[in-house]
Length: 147
Image (cartoon, rainbow, N blue to C red):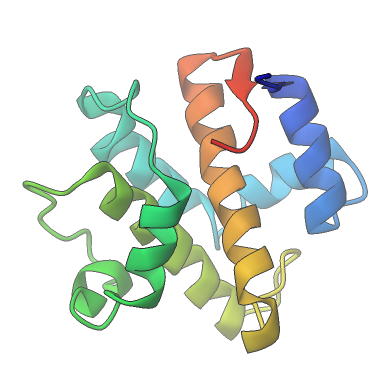
């Protein structure tokens, strides 16, 4: 049986699991200097370019984050927006996740950078944050849970 999040319940779930005291605090974090530039880039480079209906696979995103990062390190880590011609859905998602994680490591943010033992949990939360951004952009009021 499929289970679903509503956009509202996804916000609330993220608020609780990531550790924000309110949905307003989560929204403030999404608009913070450590997230907003990467969120805006994700929207501009991915969602506005006819990819809004594509969903990234969690396993493919984590594989890229874990195994393929060194090969694409410059693309994911550059403060300049790289040429994304031919990028897969997952690469767009990984760039956002990588950038927010790197920012969190070097700055005091509401969402803490992951420690090695917490990486899997942090990746899942980051993946769900990207799903939230995508759902808000597309005004998708019902999302499949855990896709």
